Every structure is written in structure tokens, then in C-alpha cells.
Amino acid sequence: MTAVALAKRKDRRNLRAVAAPPAASPAAAQHPRAEHPRECDALHKRRPHLALAYWRSAGTREPMANDYNALLAKRQEIETIARQAATISGGGFKMAGAVVDAFVDLTLPSRVDAENDLDGFAADAEAPRKPGTIMLSWRKLTDVVTDIVIAAAEANTQHLWIVVFVGLTIWSKLQASAAERLTADEATVMLALWKYRRLSDEIGDDDGFIKTNAVRAELGMPALTRDKYGAVLACLLQLGCLDVKDGVIRLRDALRLPY
Image (tube, rainbow, N blue to C red; front, top):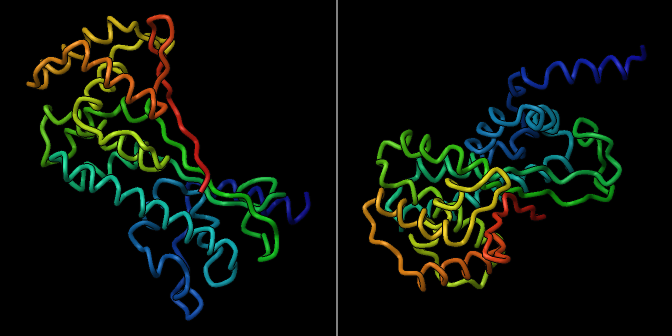
């Protein structure tokens, strides 16, 4: 086996056991971690394979360092959106961070001809790059709504809708959507539709209306009228969160955007 093959095998074994960052140096001072230490540490814990390339880029791989700056700046932008949404809806920063962790997945920009993530750090400054990706997943978020609320010390079980509201705000802002200002109504409808959807990610229009008001009753909120429910569905349709056909609502799980 060649030395290159052995090195790649070692890299893969280290994906989930990333070494500590190198000692500080003048070059490392220009590294993204110097400017975004908290975001980099969070990424190190959640995405070890990206962290492996990250530490290798310190002071030596300018293209990869630039890619990390772009990724961390985008995460910071999304976290700001989440905090603003949580604040106006009565949540808190801890809840906002948990929503971003569950709902948002970011990938690095990469070299166009890179074969895999581990090869990406070798790109030179003039190599063509393809943009990074933002992936939003309702399935991942709605699976942990209750856990997020319980973990947020400032929240209670009546704040379940805030988790979805923060997700909706991120979804809307990243698309620069022209939809009307979001409210608790859109959040509670989304919460109910995802909670009571069938395995096919579908639910009947009438059933969705009934389940929405059942969820709102559990949260201590007044019932929606049929007209208001229809207006909320129209807003969610405009946002691309769902489709409606022949009286059946089909939920859209994921959104993929370049950055």
C-alpha cells in the first residue's frame, strides 16, 4: 500500500477523534478560529470531519481558510436570525441555538474537481470552487421540538410553537421570501401538520384543520376559523413549506440553498 493510501486511511480513522488544534502562531492568528472561536468549537464537536480539514488549514491553506470564513459567517447570520425570532416570540438565545443545531446543516464550499472532503483542503487559490450548501430539514427539527423546549431553561411546554416559529423565520429569511410577517398561527399549523402527518408526509386538509385546533387548545390558544386556517395554508404554500392538491396537504421536508 502506498504512503498516500496509508495517510488517507489514517485520516478516515481520525474522523471522529480529531486532534487538538496546533499551537498559536502568527499565521494561525489569521485563521477563522481567531475571529470566530465559539462557532469553530461548536463545529469541531458536531462535524469532526470538517474540523480535521479545518485544523490542517491553519496558517497554510488559504483557500480552505476562506471557505471556513464563509461557512462561519453564514452560520453567524443564521444564528442572528434565530435569536431575533426567538426574542420577539418569547423564547431565548439557548432555544435559538438549539433550533439552528437541529434545523440547519452547512457544508463547506469545495474544489470543483475534489473527489471527497478530505481532498478539498489541498485546493490552491486559483482552483475553481463550487458554493457551500445550506440544508434545512423540518423532519429533523420536529423530531426534537419537545427536547429543545425542555432543555431551554427559560421555556415551558406551551412554548413548543416557538421552536417551529424560529425555524419558519430562518426558512423565510434565507429565501428572501415576500411572504407576510409570520405569526404564531403559521407556527401552530406547521407544528400540527408535522405532528399528525401520515408516513407519506401527507395529511388531509380537513384533518389538518381539526388537528391544528387540537394543538392550539393544548397550548392554551384560541381556535382558528376555517378562513384563517386557509389563509395560513396559503402563506405556507407561498413559503414552499407544503403543497396542496385535491384536498391533501403534502409537507416538504427539506430545502437546499447555495451560499
